[in-house]
Each structure stands twice: as structure tokens, then as C-alpha cells.
Amino acid sequence: MADTLERLRARFGDDILFTHSFAGDDTALVKRDALLAVAGFLKSELGFEMLMDETVVDHLYMTPGDDVFPGEGRFEFVAHLYSLSRNLRVRIKARAPENDARFSSLYGLWKAANFMEREIYDMYGVVLEGHPDMRRILLYDEFEGHPLRKDYPYTREQPLIAMRPREEEEQ
Amino acid sequence: MDLNSTTPQVPGAGAVRPGQEAVAVTTKLDAAIGWARKYSLFNYPFVTACCGMEYMATSSGHYDTDRFGAALPRFSPRQADLLMVVGTIVHKQAPILQRIYEQMCEPKWVISFGACATSGGFYRNYSVVQGIDKIIPVDVYIPGCPPRPETVLDALLMLQEKIQRQPQKI
Image 1 (tube, rainbow over the protein chains, first blue to last red):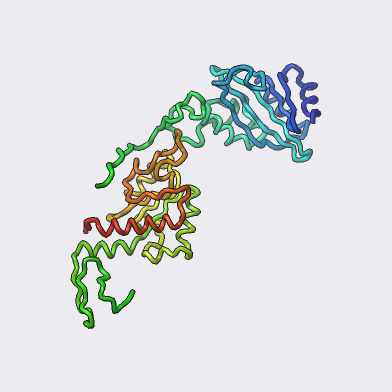
Image 2 (cartoon, chains in turn purple, red):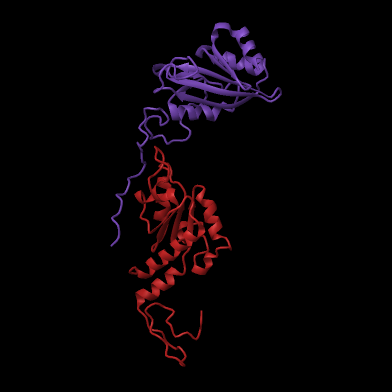
């Protein structure tokens, strides 16, 4: 329904960089600085009470034009919101460059953001500003780097204990 | 077991003559201990993933692992002599598995249950140990994703054979 996106555009104007709507799924690409305000507006004014999912996409190897979305910057923040009362969904996105990989935390609006944002930090090294406990959630503290970044070598393992050499076959 | 059978029940044991009651059985110490050990496996299931469902299916009454003396799981490594590593082992968990193995008393054996425990399975990434034999020694590997219960029984029999053959440390 275009209603959500129209309300967003009317309220935030140039802060909404791009919108897209397909089969009832609305998506808005917003300016990074406006992310928190947009999310708060969606929650309090448009009835999107529930944060379904929050993640980040690494666009390192994507060339401009590959994506439907015209955003710039390596990391793309994605949050899925759902309105229980109106049975509507909306996705909000924002982009951040590699050398300044940070977004506003949604923890103040939804407590559910807590673990999801820690996972974002763990996997991508993207910092969520305003999060009360920004540290790794799944990986061990000794782990170097962030494995879901596209430039992390996918076979690079970081064992915690010494690995045995594989035994010779018997006989 | 046929009580009148003249076939030795203990491998390497001397045969009882027909028509004569068995009053003494002769065997080699190694063979007798191996025979006792292989029919008294207490397994410790180290279950981390979906293979666990197949482990449960195998250890239920339908497949009756008690036939091989290997039915009773012990949930303390100190009371077990067969470590069954069932499922994917990640690097974060590797020290735990190693500790469990070290806590088991000798003699002890390890079965690697399923593709993930054996080789990492289809996980080739930053987190998964590419086979538990990079952490602890393994006696029998069970292929399959997940293995059929019959495969597990086959592995049990293979392990029993291996136990029977090996020199017995006392």
C-alpha cells in the first residue's frame, strides 16, 4: 500500500531517498541520519509496533546499477517492521560507507533490537550507536575480523585449540 | 545363544567336547577382555545438531542397540567408554569436546556420527571444525547426512570388531 510511503515522504521529504513498492511490500531508503526519526515515526504514528528483523548487507562486490536501490556506501542497514494492528509491512534501509560503518541503534524503540544489533556488530563490524551493550554475541572474543564481510576469506578458520595433524590410514 | 553349541562363545576359547559339560574355558587374556569390553559399551552422546534425531531413532527400542550391549547412554563422560560425537562441531565448541574426551577413562573409543562430525559436512566456513579428528582421535566414522540407523548399527559392529582385535591395556 502506497499509503505508508506517501506518509513518509510527506513527513520527511528529502530524507527519503528512494521508495519501492511491490506486492504489498513497501521499502524506503532513507538518509542515515534520519533513520531513527523515521523508525520512531513509523512506530508511533503509523502503527508499526513490531520489529521483525534487523540486519546489514555488505555490498562490497556489487557494482552500482546492479541493485534496484540507488544508495551509496558499502553497508546497507535493513529493518523489517510489521504492524499487528493494520497487518502491514514496511522495510527501511540506509547506507553507510566503509570508513564510517555506523548506524543509529533501534534499541530505544524496540528492545528486540538488542541481540540482532549485537549480531550485526559480530558479523559485519558495523557499530549501532546508542546500543547499551555493543559487543560480540555469537563468536568468541579471540576471533579476529567479522566473518560475514565479503572480504573475509571464507575458509579462514580461527581455532581456539591446537588442531591435530590428520592420522595416517591404518594398515 | 545355544547352550549346547560346541562353538566357542569367547573368541579364542577352547571348544567344549560334544556330550561333555563345560567346566572350564581356556582362552587368551586379551581375547577374553576384548570380548567383555566390546559387549559392554557405555556411550556418551555429544549431540549438537540434527543428527541427534537419528541418534535418538537408533537408540530407541525399534533398533535395539542392547543386542550389542551398547544401549545405555551415560551422561557423564567419567562413566562412559564410547564417545559418540553427533553433529556439527564448531571452533567455539572444540575446547569443550576436547575436555569431555579427556575426562573419559581408558579404555575409550570415539565414533564420529554423520558427515559434519566426520569432515565438517557441507559447512566449509569460518566456524566449523573440518572433522573432529582434528581435535580428538576417532575410531569409526559414520557417513551420511544423517546416517540411517542401520549405518549406525554397522558402525557399532565395526567398533566391536576393532575392540576385539586391539591389544587390551589393563
